[in-house]
Length: 490
Image 1: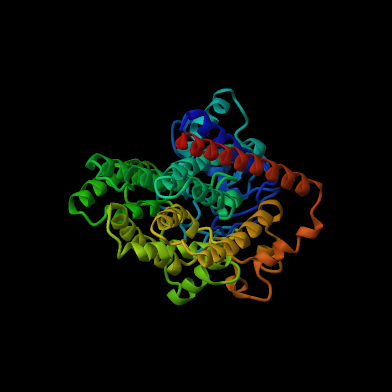
Image 2 (image 1 turned 120 degrees about the vertical axis):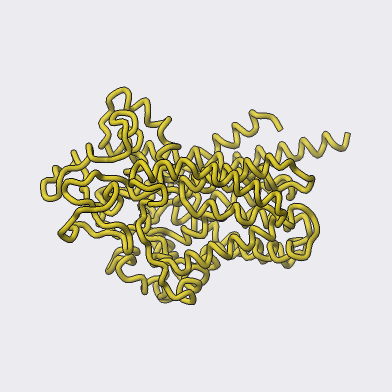
């Protein structure tokens, strides 16, 4: 396929990432207070990473903070904000004045160096984009630059992940099925509403997972160097979010030699994270999140992640059940890809259990099942492989899949244009009382749908632009497919 066609695909997806004309107001698992404007403070450390590395030649954020109680609004940041911690052991003796994440590290003391709680991966990915602004003297606390610049970086990273995933889907599914699946991935998961909107970690995780799948998921035997490379990619993904490295535990197809080289690659890829931890916190095994709690009763977490009305994976994206059917089929199917999918099914279950026991399993103030969507590329590749082994061969199965997919498409499109944090924070913040997430009489998705009749000119313009881009993308793809079919018949 020509490079120009991939370039057109990427450009159209890039426009879609911005066509909602809305700065998604979401949040990580923070317990922090509200930030002014349509943005989340979670993205600040990743965006400011370029300034502290290039100008200060270190990884602390001291230059952006002042001691507690002497903050100058709009010119400095609160050193006790939930996204900051001490670089090393905190010397704080008084309780923090700002709310902090449950189970996270304590706030830095008045004289401690200030570091980010987040791994440095997204900051590193964003560094080339922000470097020119740093070198030309741009104000590092220009929120417009940080937020909108971060949006650009996140969109680019997510589009790269989407294009790589599209290439993998084409190995197993027909062109039309691949198009359907890639559009569902981009428009009917949290990719458009969260991952591509700001410098959260999701786009970097998706890029690493999709790249590892591209390197390894082939029916023909591949050299061990590809397993090594996939391990390196997943290790680098762990520099973005540590759980990304879990995928290397299942992508090897249960071959001892491949397990060895993939794990070697993962250790190599994780080396930058260990070096950063040592530099920032004084130990390669220390990490910014602190000692997080994994004490949620597993039945509560499983129900919450899979079936709760306001975070359940099968509520927001019920069509991914076909991905699980495909992973089950892989256990009784021969072939290289089936073997690797078997291992990936165990990885997915391990991640599910891990997040189900996590103290903040719901993922903060966000639309949908944010944590589980990190591993969405696995399920979409599984569905694509499933189409090649008869998973969606019957009309009944295709009708069910279509209805489920249409439901998700409607929900996430409404959220892309209309979601804000009102439901998550009024009358009580879900981070303070997550019981609201289990209330079927007032689910989050219904609150968003209720806003549709009140859509203003911005929403209408965004919907029209999105529809125009989507129609153009589909028409170009279908025209290319028809051209290929005619050429093959000659």
